[in-house]
Figure (cartoon, rainbow, N blue to C red):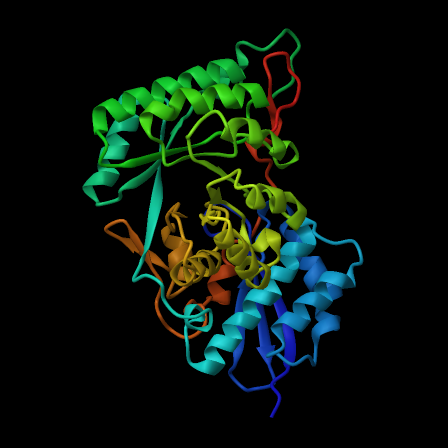
Length: 398
């Protein structure tokens, strides 16, 4: 007997400082449902509307086993494709259908993808401070917990940064790209000298510098053996990676802003990056993500799925199931799960001794407390980094 989609519901909630979009797909089989995450935290209501007003009537009555066919239909249903709103809406449905398939098979999703390639998933955690000694202490704190991969970032007081802005400057977070790069080099030198080479260090540039400056930075940090530099450039400047690649051995990670396959195809085929940082829901879900991982494997690019704090534990579980299964896994970002969120999502992934683990239960192995979610409403407060500005007051990519 064919199991079909009966209803689709959307819940938006904010248990940990970011707006989350969670989808539940109920089936014609009593008690059988799937959960998906379509979190685009800055446009959560728009994603919810796409699901409720457009995808919901399109999908009711469809066979839940036909995941590929449903994904392709959703992808062409809007005619214009590959935007972050529609991709997240599609991803939420897609992930819920994979959850259902795992539950029907009595298997965790990683078994549906070919089974485990590893026993657990190595992760990198965050260290950030405006004080270098405090930054070193944070790195050593992670090392004491057997975490061997740490992202190091230097924070800066926005008020101090704005003091260099011109008269009449608008509000915003002001950054001098040249000064920023010099600080990053000093940071790597200071931290590496004090923690030794028993920990892998990486850094996220957030596209804050011009291409030639990005090349300068990549060359200057090479002696400190970084795990990678992330997002040296925005996606629209991706071909500059050719020039960077031929002048430095510093590993490069890129991709959290990708929505369209055309954004990653040449970078992968020409082996211009070392780590693929795509965000699973922003590219449309597990269905396209597993194809991206297979493409990257053919060209020696390792997977390092984006795993920022503005995701739900369902999203973290999706990353980890992929990590468990694919041969070309590299490293997984792990921001930690705050207590209200962990309670709201029973069975959420966890870390121990530098490794992340999933529950191993069928599907994603994560549940969702909708009643608790109602106690944490979303808001529309402005994110401070939206107005990142250069010293002269002009806008800069964050």
